[in-house]
Image 1 (cartoon, rainbow, N blue to C red):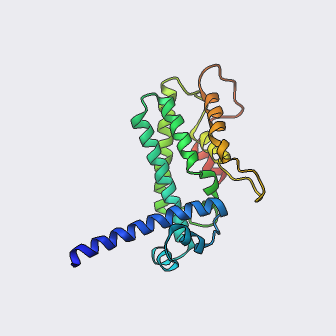
Image 2: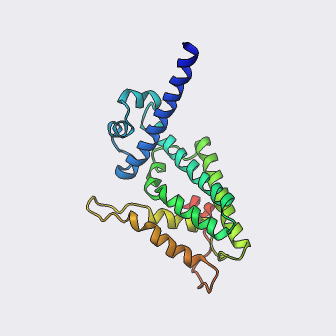
Image 3: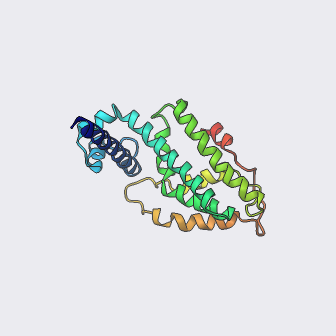
Length: 210
């Protein structure tokens, strides 16, 4: 009996933890970093005790949500690279997938809430940076993406388009995000590009502005 029950309990605990992280991600998008933990437990379909058993405090939960979002974005990049033979199509697929993760809405989680120099988070960010730059480099090498674009340019664009507008009465513009992303992507193609002001923004540029 013991050999059957123990793995099942571990599987249940793993599913509960995953549900809590997913529910927390949604709640943080809707209400910000101070979303009520009781509401997160309700969305996850677990009791408050289960939430606190998995995550000792809000800071720990936010840390795990941040890692989960970054991991999914990296997975999107790898999937696009592996499954799209056209390098610009791969980049486009990745940009739209990253937008679905609502990274703009989650940016506030990384500001003043968790340690930005945490080794685990630093490694995850480095992997995301590399995956993004690889997609851009491939599209530029194929002559499909203008060469005066850097990974930082894409990160800023996606973050701005997925950042909720202040005020509870503002229009929900999220349904329009993919439309405007496609307009942006069409402007990044190499066909008759205009001259952009400034220089290509790198991820290092964004780090210096953080």
